[in-house]
Length: 247
Image 1 (cartoon, rainbow, N blue to C red):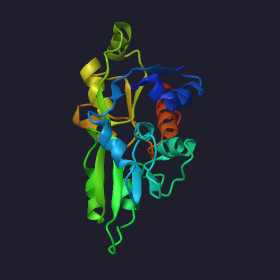
Image 2: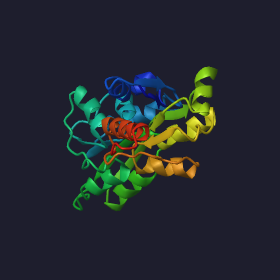
Image 3: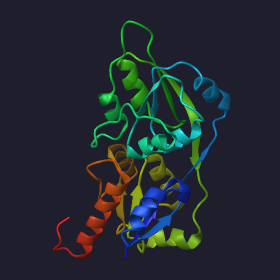
């Protein structure tokens, strides 16, 4: 049995936890970030009641932060988890990137150009610390983008001492990172993990942040998907345990 750290709170990482535990391994939930309401909730509330051609969702947290979707707007989701959260609320997804492009740049690449016959508006509800890749890319396609803070991302409390020590002394097999902010906050709260710990990142941007902060990234799935991240991590760990087994 492998011990794999999911550096998010349990209520935001249930899918990954289930994926790990259903395969017979142990998921350890270590919150590194917390989500809190925006400083001005009325800004989002008002935006959701205006007219938009598209609403673009980049996370399940953004979906949960919105009490509705503007009437008549098409809906784009960055990946399967976000799309599933939207479908659970009864919404139809009009655009999702190809399986290998579940990230901001992939969403821009899949997005249509704005019509040149009228004003064309996109609502982008997301975190206060999100990058400029998506709004900048949509603007280049001719869209007028309202980039609205739907939630703020803040650091969580440090893990309990025993778990923090295990993360530093090499008794944890792997850590699965799902965003750049979880990488940054993990290192701030816990410090650098033991060199023997396998570092897995869900996609290119997360891997880039991890490398910038001095981590050696061992695993990144072909598609930015939670199940594929878990599967790739376990395959790598099994290969380490049995070097004759191919990953």
